[in-house]
Each structure stands twice: as structure tokens, then as C-alpha cells.
Length: 256
Image 1 (cartoon, rainbow, N blue to C red):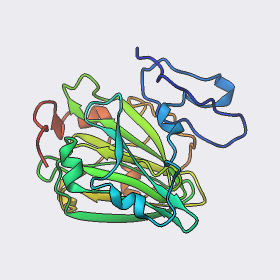
Image 2: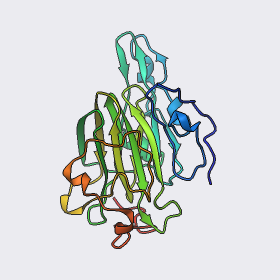
Image 3: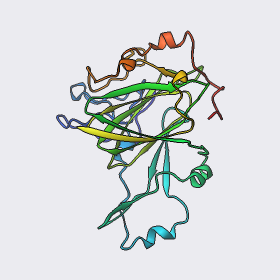
Image 4: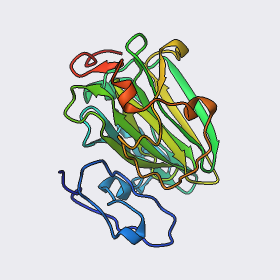
């Protein structure tokens, strides 16, 4: 059993806000009647309120400013960029290949995707197998989504475990989804848009889908009847995936 993150933000009854940063087998729970799992420190991240009067302060910095936060699933991290705000609006860098590489994230992204969904749409869990393995860098640019990943690397100490984070247009957090993970998200706002970078081109023949509600994974989604595509309705159970796994721990590191 794991432990709660160092800081927590208590969920309020009737707020409509879901758990954030929770993961399976942590042993962290808020009162059952609240219907939420414990909140992670990532829910407290907020765009830095750096004030600049003419944008000159931002130009002094020759490197992208951001913080990397580890998750309980090795390889998956949350990126917190620095946002410069003034009376005109804001500015931030969402990706800089040089500066990310200097921090150990050296990825050649080749495709950018932009997805728009209405409330209660759930997409996933999606992955591309080792014939076209894909790393994703996901962010929400309108509304808010509950973004969830699950470790599909057979032999991994965290195989079958999941981690969730709320991505919003306001907190500007990004989730790096490594090779070997399934990815899903649920739209929490009336409408939401996510944009994500991909390390390889979309390859339908390589794509797999794990059932969003597989009890062996056990994500306590805040909806019981989400809007699903026909493909996602037919997602396989984890037990079925194990018959022909797409990923094995130790064989995916460095791919993509």
C-alpha cells in the first residue's frame, strides 16, 4: 500500500470536482460520502502569477521554465510550465525540444492532435503497440478533463495500476504518457479540448483499446454511463490483454 501525497486538497461535497492524482492501491480515501479519492499535490499547481509589464522579463530567460513532477508510475510525469501573465493575457512555452532534452525528456514529436469533446465523453484506454509505439504529451486548452493512464507493461512492478490527474485550461498542466501505457480521458466541463503531441504517426493497425471500466483496473470514474465510441465500447479486458500483451517491462525503454 502506498501513502498519500505530501499535500492534499480536500474535496467539497457538492462541488462537482473529481479526485485528482489518485492511483490504485494507495490506501488514500476521503470520506466515502464525498465520493472522491484523496487529492494529489498536482491539484494545487497553479500557473505562476509572474507579472511582466512589457514581456521583457520573459525574454531575459534563455531557457524554457518548467517543473517536472513524478507520478507513482515510473516514466509518467506531469509538466508544470511557468506562465507569464499581465493585463494583456498570458504567455507560456508548452514545448521546447532543447530544454526538455536537457531535463531528460528527449523525444522527437512528429504529429500534433487536437480533440474536442462534450461533457461525459470518455475516450480510451488507447495505446499503440510496439509496431508503432507512441509517446504522448497531453494538455487541456479548453475546459477540464480527467486524464487517466494505466501501466500495461507486463512484468512492471506497477502493471495494471492507474494514475489520474485533472488537466484544465487554467492549471495548464501537461501529462507525459510513455510507451507501454494506456491513456484515457473523461470530459468534465460542458465542452473540452485537448491537444497532444505524438512521437510517431497514428497507425490504426497498431492501436489497441482496453475497457474503460475493467474491474481489474478499477478506476472509480465519476460517471457510470459515459458517451463512448463503438470502438471504445468493445475494449478488451486486462485478462484478455494478458493473452497477447503489447508491452513487456524492460523492452519498451528507449523506444519511440
